[in-house]
Image (tube, rainbow, N blue to C red; front, side, top):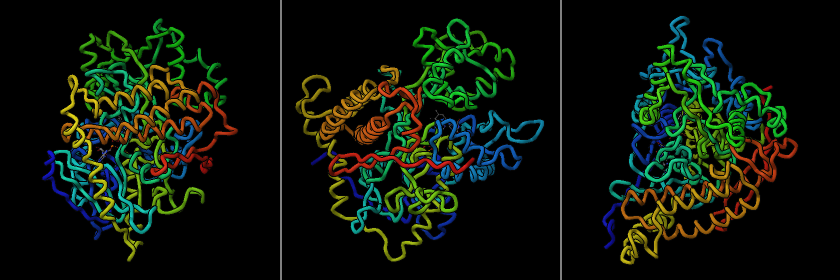
Length: 614
Ligand SMILES: Cc1cc2nc3c(=O)[nH]c(=O)nc-3n(C[C@H](O)[C@H](O)[C@H](O)COP(=O)(O)OP(=O)(O)OC[C@H]3O[C@@H](n4cnc5c(N)ncnc54)[C@H](O)[C@@H]3O)c2cc1C
């Protein structure tokens, strides 16, 4: 009798299944109810939606708000901003669609109890920067989750979704998902007419700067485990811009945010000798990317680039000049509160390293790369655009539907749409949900059907690591080392080392080339073979095993895309040493991939970038 042989199989039927109850998932759940009054709406989350996802600890600013009620910005302005920051390549239709609706989302947050700071003179929301407004956001996630909880028929917390289910009559149509309860080991079969994937981004596919017992200290949430990409990839959905992984400049060791410091406190950076260094790298950067270096604001990746070049030239450490701003008691308070609302760890790091920013300028550093679709980066699934705005090439179905029928996405899941952040992700969840409701209503008498054989086979696959461990533990040779299984942590460290060394991580100065990428793919292939021998001691480790599966597949996608794009589009995020320059003639386009799970092959293609906004 296996350890969990008495576990149940639980069947959950729904019209709309939302996978992941973070910002986008809560938006999708809320809006599904609004448009689908009679539909059954289910949200499934591997943690607990009360405090799950990247916003778990809270935020200090909402980074995407137009302020149309005061004529501060228009949606077109935001499209121009995101396009500029991503070196020309964004899905303008999708970005515009979010920008035109995002203010209404923020107004709902306020109505639901989120305290938004006000400018005492104008009465408007307190701006941190052109797009950011300041909030007292420690309880941001519970407030948003409450709206989703009230809207859903059922919220299933603590269920890790491992695979999507496909319709047995139409191979390119989704029919649900499977997963397991991380607390009691019950197997879950979700049968649904439409599925909205909102499972966040990916950390820990590259070796982090902090290793050993500190390895959980990353900028992006350590529990963001690439399910948002792996689930659609396995279902055959096309992905886009997976090479556009992001690197962040943050306060050293605590990854504390710098936005409020730059924008609100007006702090600035200098090199080890107190010199301004960005202008020193102007000509060098111009030779690589041309006029993009003259854009305002300077694209995020290029600001990283100047910092990295200065470090390589021996000008480090780079410091944020806080001593001047912190003489103002108000600014000093804002500086500390900025961390207390979202990254308490940074305050603790400073305390432990004797850094009082009033007297010592703290160091900055660049993070390891992450894969996301909602920040200053736009990796993710290739989605159909809004019918009133998207060019014909970007429309094959319902808004935010991927290239698989009935499969929708939002937030970090969807590619091509940078700078949506928390509010834009929630908004995109709402947009996807409205379209999914229409899709379900249009299905009529042709709902998808789940194959019993498919989920029974998947059940064996999902729990195999427990069985592998049960048998293999009798052969342990030393400590935790067994000749017949690999623990999830060992597999994760192997993945991180491989991506770091071959696909442009921190120890390679974010640099790679064709031979490195080709070898990286070979090593990833070997790692994938070995994933069949993952051993899980308990349900917690089983979750780690499936998170690793998802991370490996997303990593393979990143590597394939990086190999395909033979240019360096975003210096500061990564460098193709064999193609060091930006090449607008051949690469002013999106990269698309499709994975065939039967052959293990990736099909790559280019898609046009349409500039809809002047
Ligand atoms: C450090 C940091 C600072 C940020 N600062 C700001 C800021 O100041 N302002 C701002 O507006 N935005 C900020 N953001 C961005 C914002 O947090 C994201 O844009 C937003 O959370 C993305 O929403 P999402 O729903 O795609 O992902 P998430 O909110 O991360 O939600 C994903 C959800 O999916 C669940 N999940 C994952 N895999 C599975 C699975 N297999 N099965 C079931 N559930 C699963 C997760 O547990 C999680 O709840 C910040 C992000 C980070 C990491």
